[in-house]
Length: 91
Image (cartoon, rainbow, N blue to C red; front, top):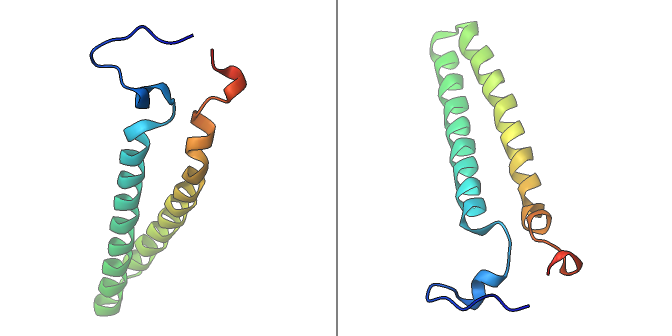
């Protein structure tokens, strides 16, 4: 069944999927990952300068967070396939 024609309707809108939200989400995750890496390097520099153990602990926690963000970003590769309905499900 074809949708009712409207002025703002385009053929591209027929394809369902993650849309621009998924792209923006990936961008935010990549930005957070970059910030985590910069923070790790900053804390390691602080540890090298001052030798305080707190900086090393903070760098370790940030490393765990960066690895988790990287794993999450990798899992987003299949987001389009998971959000796009299959042909049999469409009406």
